[in-house]
Amino acid sequence: MNGIYHTLVGYAGGTKDNPSYYALGDHTETLQIEYDPSLISFKEILQVFWDSHNPVSRSGSRQYAAIIFYHNEEQKEAALESRTVLEQQLQKTIYTEVLPYSRFFPAEDYHQKYYLQGNRELTAEMRSYYPDFKDFIRSTAAARLNGYLGGFGNAALLDAEIDQLGLSSRGREVILNQVD
Image (cartoon, rainbow, N blue to C red; front, side, top):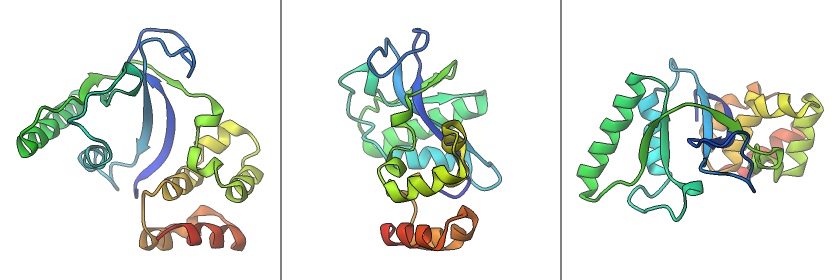
């Protein structure tokens, strides 16, 4: 998505310190997003969120609950308004929660940039630029590639930004062959 420059998967919403996948406590798996509001609005991100999950389905556990964590009153109002509009459109109860952000704990390394790490060739290229794993997962290029590999974005958007990803000719070929 144009305007999203960092993503990190992790855990939030609970009380346990330093949760992990196998010791999650009362946290929920979540995605932390950093974005440029001059390129994409919070409301546009909310629309993608609503389109990306089934808000009328109850989660089987707290681990997989659908939650929007807001950082300020403006985000809270936008999230609640979008939930109300969707509930009216669907004429069904929405189970997605809207909660204040408090703390975020990054998930284990093998969860980060999951789609990208599933492509050995692109991962190797990105890791050659970012040998420190923390730099790799904070890389805007890695976030963008991960999004494309996960099915977010299209060939036109990729074509418009591929020069900014810093890929070799082989890396360009690999990602272009993966995106419709």
